[in-house]
Image (cartoon, rainbow, N blue to C red; front, side, top):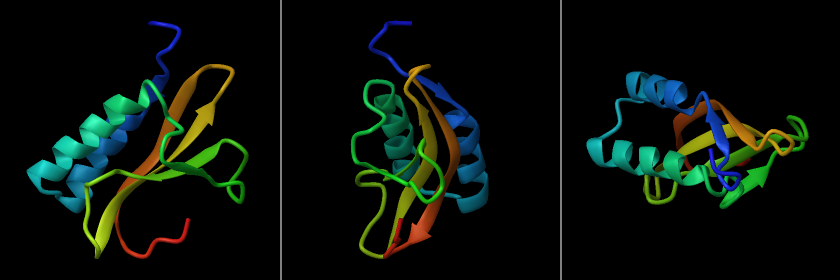
Length: 99
């Protein structure tokens, strides 16, 4: 693995759980899997740190995967030392979402 690439853990498992639970449209599935792939190069982009949950927790909305009423969001942990990101949940949530 290239030193510039982050290791992603549990994202595909959470992606499958999201599909089974929320039954998203095909275009949303494509946007979310593309976003997951993008995280390998920059897991911080567009994410907000959730210090109330712990130092390593980050919350992000998947760009363009929702509308004014709802969006697709992920909660994950970033480990700088290991250059890894571990997903805890991907979910479709009604807006506004207060991280």
